[in-house]
Image (cartoon, rainbow, N blue to C red):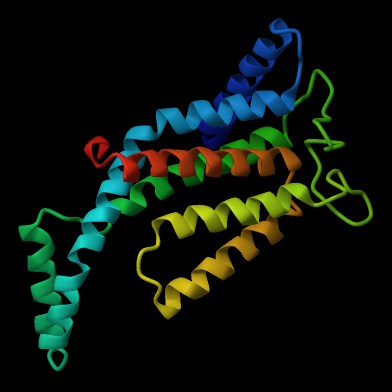
Length: 218
């Protein structure tokens, strides 16, 4: 069922964008993956707006939440009730910011299997990448300079940093751990998936910059 509703449509979409690159005179699966990624991010833009609005609302509530934590530090049950009431009164749902991430997971899995199991009808090289279907390894490197894993880590860091306003110890750890983790696992993933992750992060960074800069947009 997952193949039918997610993986196969992703493969069809990838083929569609590859045909577009052929018609443009530059057949490239790498470029097709980039176009597919941009299309997905544009389709998910309303969810991104919802995520950013939720994050900003939660951030604005933090001074009041801290005041409640100080006031009811010896009464955990009352604290949870007061915080829930605070969010309800201000019509803020702290969990709504997770929705785009939940939606993106099956899409990411679909692209992973779409690229891994895709029957390529043209060259699988792209720029410095020898094979979009292969991961990066020391014995058979498709990305001999490890540029894609590094870009995955860097863009993940920037994307996280952009939305982190309060540098708690936990946030500092996540700012380091997540980029390192993403960069590490990208080494074993098909290079095409790494391109998807980098471009997706770049579009997300641009969208968030625009929305934070233009408060009227959110």
